[in-house]
Image (cartoon, rainbow, N blue to C red; front, side, top):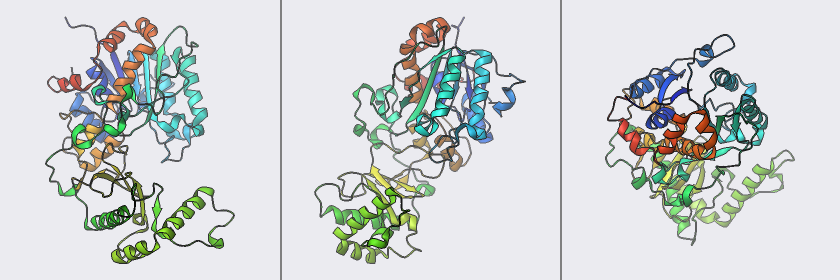
Length: 448
């Protein structure tokens, strides 16, 4: 007879990043919710479990259809707290989905609750929301840190399931206890590497790894995109010949601000950040006026048909590199951003996939899935790449989830032993990385 397994529910499940970690730990999913039909189909395809739809219909004041369980996990919608959104917090309808989570916690009293959200949730604009979440969990009988646990997969070494992706997220871990008022020290300090890992040691080609042969035409640049990068690459090389260190300054360059300023450039209403931005760009232009004029004429830089306003903005974050060859590039709505090809910016749910200059293409869906810690057996079926990129951008890092769970076992050791011995044993006995057990899941029936 098989050993008893801990059970879990996976709320706002997406394509199953939490499921990957908890399944590899030996847990059994007894309920999942995901309102997006396409994501639900990918979840079912890989995990053999079909999520329910709208959680508000299964967990409210009148209904509780979520079964008993040991662990509740939820990467609840981040738009109310994200810098890219309106940041209305719990004043926005989606923000109130936390209350549905709380209904389940109070009705089912799981031994462990793990919530994940964007870094901004623990920022000053959402102090009220943060205090509300922590306070309601404590009043429901849970020990939880008042400090945010912040982790990014690029701060984890490869041996711990780290991945070369800068993706800072806030984790709230709450454990059922008879002493919820007992304090918890700050255990995951924001911005700190784990085990002394040097984040500059990442190398996409080796650590991700990048695929050797990808022929999909859709991953290549358009002729106009090639023009933009050829032009900016030319400026990088020309400036690199004149400097010993970084060829370009670290602040965003904006071609439309390359002019000499006079006293009428600013009004009393001009914000300080914009004034500083315009002054720095003006100084850069004045110091390199002859070179910039010749470069702009060569590339017809101010022809809007060739260079839209957003492509006349350029941000160099690649240090002392002298060419674009060893960089990754983001074609952002606000401009072009360039950094070293060590670790990528965070995957997002919109079309800002990283372009690897050396490979001459964007990251493939498989490579983006690897960035989230998903194994190569993970399938997206026959859906479009556009949907797959979106789902991955909305997902969670398997390695980060794994590390937080393992870390929780140490921080809440006595509480977990009492609340759920089977969960405690699973966490304590698990390896430091999810990679091997997750890979092994590909050899078994994952629906069991």
